Length: 394
Ligand SMILES: C[S@@+](CC[C@H](N)C(=O)[O-])C[C@H]1O[C@@H](n2cnc3c(N)ncnc32)[C@H](O)[C@@H]1O
Image 1 (cartoon, rainbow, N blue to C red):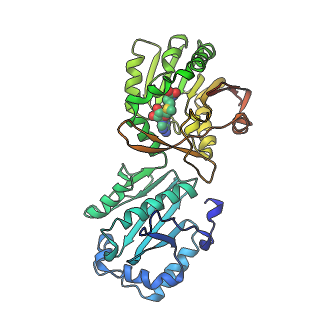
Image 2 (tube, protein in one colour):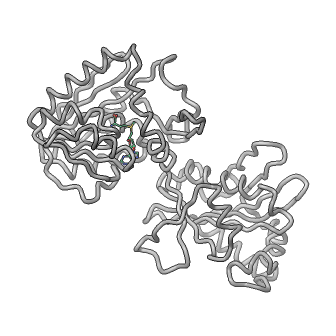
Image 3 (spheres, protein in one colour):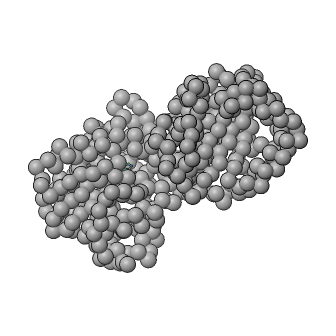
């Protein structure tokens, strides 16, 4: 659990309302038990979890529940209120840090339903989980098959039906939202627009220099490329490398990359998540990650590096490059989260906006992340970009 959100529930922050009539969620206290009893004993609410007549709890049982809640640091429970309605219901999440996910639940009294309050409260909860629980990669739930309203609600908050993880016991459904899904979706949706980022006239000198450097560094190497996107860098590297396995999580960008590099026999493409690289072979003599580091949350850098390094031969060369923040040229930073990650609001041509995590590390930060795992670390600063190279040390 994030140190800020320790076991003292009184220190858990309220989820900030966006408007005056927005719901306000705060950590549950013993004084909330009468409201919760009314919710739990209402068959209209509890029928969806198998209790047509409600839970039939009394205050004593509710107190027992509250004591168990307080003694379990993985469970977080909130009550929700809204102007004009009063008590709306409960929200909770439980962290499974072994499997890096948090289960969500929400129950609202009938008087608070159908007003958009549950959607706002649940979205704020998802946001809170991703901000305050760095070890959680995904939030999940299992709405009852016949509970269409719950399914619509979770869908509005970005959760989608997903194959149930093998480590879980059987259940009626499994809906999930991954922490980086906005990033993934953004790049999937803007695949056709992506290359415009390389058309900015003021950046052409830097780009030419990066191209020339990359080709020199990767000549005759067996290259694993992470998050290759539309293949902008795969195309010049392919002909000089011995081979390139270019990976990305999004089939939409891979199909553009395949088309672009179609005539280069040494280049192969594969769909792979950079955090697992599942199915990717080993013993590459070089790795390339262009404009990927900036999208990795700070807390996930060590895990990303260990997965990457496992795929490389000892003494392999790693090439990283990414953006520097240039005021007036870079998209402004919209917020910074508690672990220091920065975010941008990215807009597609059709107006849809996505919040994308985009960090701008300096040489010192890259050095700290690589400490103990790299030798011959070099860092070069261009006007718009940085380039770092190192050899892995085992
Ligand atoms: C900024 S683009 C970089 C593309 C390419 N390397 C370039 O420099 O033009 C980031 C890429 O990361 C991919 N991506 C997002 N999440 C990913 C993940 N978990 N694993 C692998 N690729 C991912 C996106 O599909 C996108 O193509």
